[in-house]
Image (tube, rainbow, N blue to C red; front, top):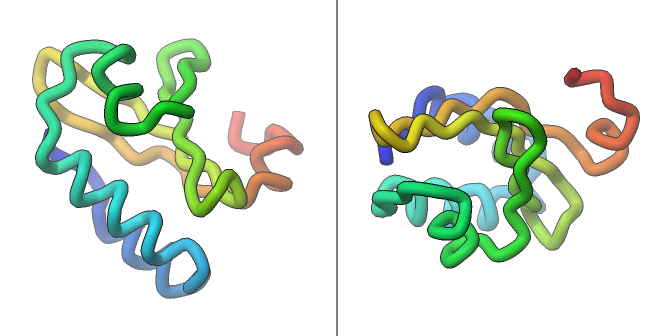
Length: 94
Protein backbone atom coordinates (compact mmCIF):
# COMPACT_ATOMS: atom_id res chain seq x y z
CA UNK A 1 0.00 0.00 0.00
CA UNK A 2 1.09 3.53 -0.63
CA UNK A 3 0.50 5.81 2.37
CA UNK A 4 -0.47 9.39 1.57
CA UNK A 5 0.86 11.90 4.08
CA UNK A 6 3.37 9.78 6.01
CA UNK A 7 4.87 13.11 7.10
CA UNK A 8 1.72 13.73 9.16
CA UNK A 9 2.38 10.46 10.97
CA UNK A 10 5.97 11.45 11.76
CA UNK A 11 4.88 14.92 12.89
CA UNK A 12 2.23 13.47 15.19
CA UNK A 13 4.68 10.93 16.58
CA UNK A 14 7.16 13.70 17.39
CA UNK A 15 4.46 15.58 19.31
CA UNK A 16 3.18 12.41 21.04
CA UNK A 17 6.25 10.25 21.78
CA UNK A 18 4.17 7.55 23.49
CA UNK A 19 2.49 6.89 20.12
CA UNK A 20 5.70 6.90 18.06
CA UNK A 21 6.48 3.17 18.20
CA UNK A 22 2.91 2.15 17.38
CA UNK A 23 2.66 4.66 14.53
CA UNK A 24 5.97 3.49 13.08
CA UNK A 25 4.84 -0.14 13.26
CA UNK A 26 1.52 0.78 11.61
CA UNK A 27 3.36 2.60 8.82
CA UNK A 28 5.82 -0.24 8.17
CA UNK A 29 3.07 -2.88 8.18
CA UNK A 30 0.81 -0.84 5.93
CA UNK A 31 3.52 -0.13 3.36
CA UNK A 32 4.16 -3.89 3.01
CA UNK A 33 0.45 -4.77 2.78
CA UNK A 34 -1.60 -5.51 -0.33
CA UNK A 35 -5.03 -5.45 1.31
CA UNK A 36 -8.11 -6.03 -0.81
CA UNK A 37 -10.77 -5.62 1.90
CA UNK A 38 -11.37 -4.99 5.60
CA UNK A 39 -10.96 -8.67 6.48
CA UNK A 40 -7.39 -8.54 5.17
CA UNK A 41 -6.72 -5.33 7.09
CA UNK A 42 -7.91 -7.11 10.24
CA UNK A 43 -5.36 -9.86 9.66
CA UNK A 44 -2.73 -7.21 10.43
CA UNK A 45 -4.75 -4.93 12.72
CA UNK A 46 -7.49 -6.94 14.39
CA UNK A 47 -9.21 -3.92 15.94
CA UNK A 48 -9.58 -1.95 12.70
CA UNK A 49 -13.16 -0.75 12.27
CA UNK A 50 -15.15 0.59 9.36
CA UNK A 51 -17.12 3.82 9.82
CA UNK A 52 -18.79 4.76 6.56
CA UNK A 53 -15.97 4.94 4.02
CA UNK A 54 -13.32 5.40 6.70
CA UNK A 55 -11.20 2.78 8.41
CA UNK A 56 -10.34 3.52 12.03
CA UNK A 57 -7.18 2.12 13.62
CA UNK A 58 -6.44 1.94 17.34
CA UNK A 59 -2.94 3.21 18.06
CA UNK A 60 -0.82 2.70 21.20
CA UNK A 61 -3.24 0.41 22.98
CA UNK A 62 -6.30 2.43 21.95
CA UNK A 63 -4.93 5.66 23.43
CA UNK A 64 -5.01 7.21 19.95
CA UNK A 65 -7.15 6.75 16.87
CA UNK A 66 -6.07 7.06 13.25
CA UNK A 67 -8.79 7.75 10.72
CA UNK A 68 -8.00 6.69 7.18
CA UNK A 69 -9.63 6.11 3.85
CA UNK A 70 -8.39 3.07 1.95
CA UNK A 71 -8.64 2.72 -1.81
CA UNK A 72 -8.10 -1.00 -2.22
CA UNK A 73 -8.14 -0.91 -6.02
CA UNK A 74 -5.35 1.67 -6.23
CA UNK A 75 -3.58 0.36 -3.10
CA UNK A 76 -3.54 3.77 -1.39
CA UNK A 77 -4.19 4.63 2.26
CA UNK A 78 -5.07 8.25 2.97
CA UNK A 79 -4.36 9.34 6.54
CA UNK A 80 -7.14 11.79 7.37
CA UNK A 81 -6.75 12.37 11.12
CA UNK A 82 -4.75 11.17 14.09
CA UNK A 83 -6.41 11.97 17.40
CA UNK A 84 -6.36 11.07 21.05
CA UNK A 85 -9.17 8.74 22.02
CA UNK A 86 -10.85 11.66 23.85
CA UNK A 87 -10.71 13.90 20.77
CA UNK A 88 -12.11 11.08 18.66
CA UNK A 89 -15.01 10.55 21.09
CA UNK A 90 -15.93 14.24 20.92
CA UNK A 91 -16.44 13.80 17.17
CA UNK A 92 -14.84 17.09 16.15
CA UNK A 93 -13.19 15.30 13.17
CA UNK A 94 -16.54 14.52 11.52
